[in-house]
Length: 220
Ligand code: AMP
Image 1 (cartoon, rainbow, N blue to C red):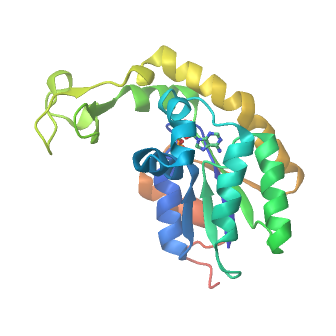
Image 2 (spheres, rainbow, N blue to C red):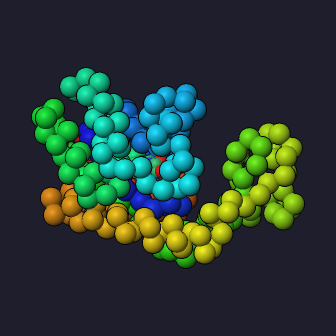
């Protein structure tokens, strides 16, 4: 099975894509992870993208396309995968189409996680991060949300600048300015599967499997 995973920041896209890949035995291919790793390794790509990734800006289509093409070209012919974080623009969707066509591959579905904006603002606004080790927490699960300490390293927890409501709304606007074109691209091919993603991680996972015809009652 070959899938594309779409969803705004705070939709739980990364978590759900990873779980789904594990449940269906697919590779989880996440461009954000690839870029973060390249930055850590200080590779040529890492040096090119560091500033953009660190500022939450999009990496140019041509460079993302190149990185994804190299990665997918290295996979065996029978590989199944979940693409997470790519494509993010209509141009990238066309690039992906070309990469797939060349390998004789087709997509089974483009899954779009749907979460109302208020829920995302509340979710990300409630996120607390350890400024030292990067561990994340939800404020409503902390004994003292305003003075939280990291369970791993004991350092104070903070709210990321870009998780403040105004910044979250800006990030969502930026997301939709390019993502709408991607959804339209897959809707036109009859591949778009919209999944409500407001519930718990387990509930959303179940809804996802059902949307892909892999629910508990499906013998295939
Ligand atoms: P993510 O983990 O998917 O949120 O990605 C982290 C960062 O990597 C993004 O904020 C972008 O800077 C960059 N990035 C990842 N995937 C893409 C993509 N498909 N197009 C452009 N930039 C991307």
